[in-house]
Amino acid sequence: MSGETANISQFCELAWYNWIMYCPGTIDYPDELLHLRKYLGPTINVGPAMTAEILQHNGEVVYQSTYWALTVEEQANSTVQQDMVPFRETAEEHLGAKLTHAELEEVGIPVTPEYLPYSDEDQNETTFPDLVEEVTSEVGDEYRPGW
Image (cartoon, rainbow, N blue to C red; front, side, top):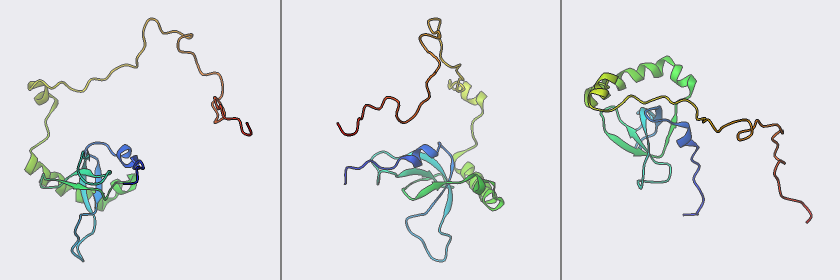
């Protein structure tokens, strides 16, 4: 424990159920080193700081800290896309088919609403002015060298 903040950029780059590649804890050579799986989010109180919950094709969840998001090029790769098909099929066998909007509403879960950007009758150009000055690294800098 060094007291330093972990690099959380990996959490910011991934959304729930994104495709990822991960390296399992044990590897039997000459088996393939990387596995294509689904990201479920960060863990809480499990493993090191950057540990994530990863969905296996059989519906089980594993905890791993060695993973990364697929790039746009990797997702467009025909070999990777072929590997996604059996994962989806096997996961659906174990977890069931995804719910439709009608099925969600039937059990009382509304479809995610879309909201308009916030504004009210009191908002005008004076209360929320346009930015007129150029933003630079020196704007608002209180540091004066040599003082």
